[in-house]
Image 1 (tube, rainbow, N blue to C red):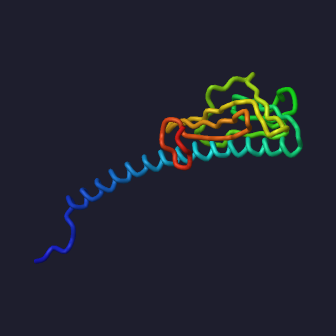
Image 2 (cartoon, helix red, strand yellow):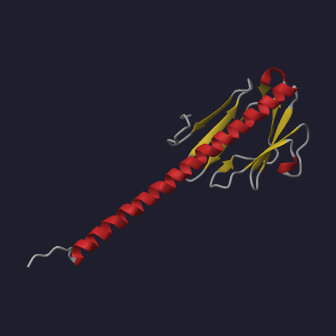
Image 3 (cartoon, one colour):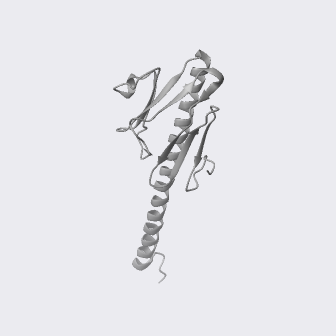
Length: 158
C-alpha cells in the first residue's frame, strides 16, 4: 500500500513556517509604510513652501509663515496670525498619517520675501516611529529636505 498524502505532522510544520514568515513580512510592511509616510509628508511640505515662494516671487509680495500645533498645520498670511489655519492665504494641513512636527512653538513665524526670492531662515523637523526628517529654508530662498537619523527612500541623508 502506497501513501500519497501528507502526514498531520508535515502539515503542522508547513503551517507554522508560513505563520512565522507572515508575521515577519507584516512587520516589515508596516515599517516600510511608515517610511513612505515620512518621506511623502516631508516632500509635500517642501513643495508647499516652494509653491509659496513662487507665489511671493511672481506677485512680489511678502508672506509670513505661521505654525499651529493641534492638529499641526502651517498657514501663510500677509500680516498677523489667523485664528484658524484654514483662514490663511495658503495653508498646509497635516496629512492623515503618523508624522508629527516637533520643535514647534505657537509664536514661531518666518518670512518669505517676494523681492529677490529671499526668505528668513527656518527649518521644520518631522518625525514618526521610524525616523526624523528636516525641511530647510535658507535666507537665499533655497528649500531642501533630508533624512536625519535613518535611511528613508527618496530623502538624501542630512
